[in-house]
Every structure is written in C-alpha cells, then in structure tokens.
Length: 508
Image 1: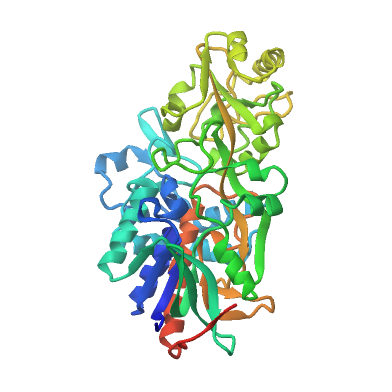
Image 2 (image 1 turned 30 degrees about the horizontal axis):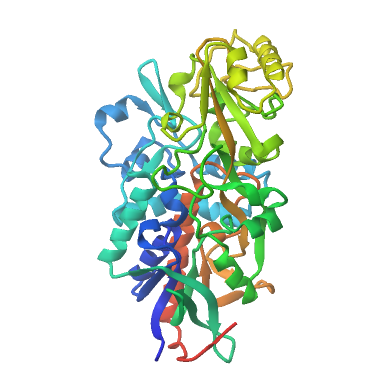
C-alpha cells in the first residue's frame, strides 16, 4: 500500500504538541497529530497539571487582555502587581544558577504574553490563581511569586480547549499511535515517521516533523542511567507514556543532546501515590504548603530551608532532596495556626496523614520516624523562631528561625498549637531537563555539527537547555506553548516550501 502523507506530522498531543499543530495549520499546512496514549489518557503531562502559566505583564491592563471576563469587583480587591520581562528572565537565570541558555530563555520570556494571547484567540480561557497564589490579607488579595493566571479547568481544561480548537481547524489527532522511527530516503533526507498501532507498523510520510512527545521521566531505565542511582524507584507524577521516544529517534538521526541530563523537575508527592499519575486525582498528590511548616526525615531531622523562597522557586528541586533521605521519604508537619493556609491537595481523600494533640503522640504515629529525635528537633526549632517579626504569607516576610541547621529564612512559626498534622511524602518526578538542542528562533532540531536537521523541529519537555536543576513554577507550560507555536509555524513554512516527500523510505 502507498503510505499516507501529510505536510506536517506532530508527535505527541500535550500542550506543546497541540500548539504546534494549530500553529502549523494556521500557516495553511495539512497536519496530523499522533499520540501514543489512548483518548482516555490524552494530553500527556499537561493533563496532570493545574494549568498555571507564567507570563510577562506590566500591570493589570495587560492581564485583562488575557482574562477579559475578570469580574470588576475581583479586580478592584486584588493586587496583581506586575511581572516584567526582567523579573521573568532573572527568575529563570537565578533558579537555574545562570545555566539556562540565554537565547532560549529570552525567547520564552519575550513571547510569553503574545503566545497566551494567541491561545486565547484559539479558545483557551484564563483566570486568576486565587487560593494557590494569593492570600486574603486585610480584605485584599495579593499575588506573590510571579505566577498569576491559569487555564480554566486546569491541565484537563487546557487540553480540552486545544483539542477542540484542533477539531475546528481540521487537525486530525490519532490516538494509540506510537512513533518509533524517523524515516529517511536514500539521500538521507527526513521523509516521515514509522508508527506502531495495535501491534502493527505503518508509515506516514511528512514534509516536516515536530517532536513534542515529552521527556524520559516514565522510563525507569533511563532515569537510573541519567538521573542516577535510586531514581528508578521514584514515582512519576504524570503520564506513563513519556519514555523518551522522541529524544531517542532524534539522537539516532544525529541530533545534538543538550541541557541537564542528570536533572529533573521533582516535587514532594504523597508517599502512597501510585507508580504513575492518576487522572482521577490529577495533581492532588503533590504537597506544596511546606513553607508554612517544617519538613523532617525518618531520623527526625530537618534537611532543607522550607522558607528559602516562595514555593514556586523551590518545590521543583525539593523532590530530589526527599529522594536523598532515608527510605526516600519525609514528613511535612504543621500546627493549627497555619492549617487554614494549606492548599486543597492536603484535603483530598487519598492522603497519607497522621494527626495528634501533642508532638509526642504525633511522633508515635509517624511510622518509621525516630520520635525522640523529632521532639528534640521541634523544641530546638521553636526556640529559634523570631516571633517579633510579623508573619505574612504574601511576601518574603523575613520571619526566620536562626541558629538551627538548616535555618528557615521566611514564614517560620513555632509548631506549638494543637492539633498537629503530619503528611508523609516521597519524590514525584514531573519531567526531565535533558533533551535536544534546538535553534531558539525556529525550534529546528540541531545536529552534532550544530547544523539544523532539515524538516525536524521540537518543542516541549524534550527540549534541553532551558531548565537546570530547578525552574520557576508555571514556566513549563508557557515554554511548551511558546516553542510549540514557533515549531509549528517553522515546520509549516519548511513543508510548504519543500518538494513532495518520497513514497518509499528506510528506517534509520
């Protein structure tokens, strides 16, 4: 049979992939999307997120361009502040220890607002992240940490909106189709992709291919190989389908690996969460209110500065710290004074929690923890808290605990008012930071000679060079959308200006 052909073939069906598909279609290209998951597991990692997206805005007027439905009373009672280009760029460089590729970072920052505006035109709706990113103080909400908006409906809502936009614009999405090889003709030119569907193989010829199939976090062998010993035992927050296929296929074609291959986005995740994400729970297994309490290991000792910064700038690296603790687990402890500040994820049914009216009783119920050491740690911590500085969750309040190791820089409160709560957590991997080198202006995949591979583009979590060791919360979805839009447009221009692909090829 003659293989089917299209202008642009997009591999993956998450946020980055669907943005690429819509962008390519907007340029007039015929587009097919292939996704390894079935329709019930669609959306890749995006479906497991809360849908937060970091974006540049100089004031509330620029936010209203993205959220025109914002209630006037809400706007009047909210301090959105501003999040400038310099703020966003500096946050990326600061949290990555200035290793982020400055060209990639600048592209992400400079195109963030325009890309979200384009997504809104495609049917994506945005709303303020009340509850997770702003607290009510003196009758007024104040946003903190540079993260202000989310897609309505969270990650599932974002995928639904983008999928509907693809349907309206004539983009076909094929589920249960796993890409396994990039195809070349006798001259070595990329001509399409070999697909596995229901145990059989088929070829789809394409003038351009966009790789948007995620990182390798779902592959325990690759995690152990690149992240290091013990990482094969970590939980995976999202999809089970991100096996590194897109990265592997591109490397087989001579692509240049780039970025932090030993690094990943990893967070505090419920101790008894399943091996992979559960769409019924979504991101509810995460536990991100730790700045308002303390974190201890099974030895009864603290091991990180819980208040080093807003959680947006620390949560993606503290999963690694938990993985390094005895038993690859830890406990987050809070008292009743801050229980009202805990995020909704602490109230889900599937939570590993113990409560007590005394620290001694709490320690007895925390399985595997040295109770005597825990009591001593809390007594030492309570004595070190600066109670003269007012507590304010909306700012880096400087309310510290000094003279303890490690210190707590902000939001330090004594653990002294019962009832006490302790939540057991382990490490949950979100996505890996190592991947493919791309051209910052076109999203073309670059080979080992630093030349663009004709017809091959990439976006999303398989792009290396943006995040190193850590990342600013909400920038992952924005990065996927920005480079997805670029990759799709570039792939369409390449395809529409290229000759028709050959009808026969070889797998390489």
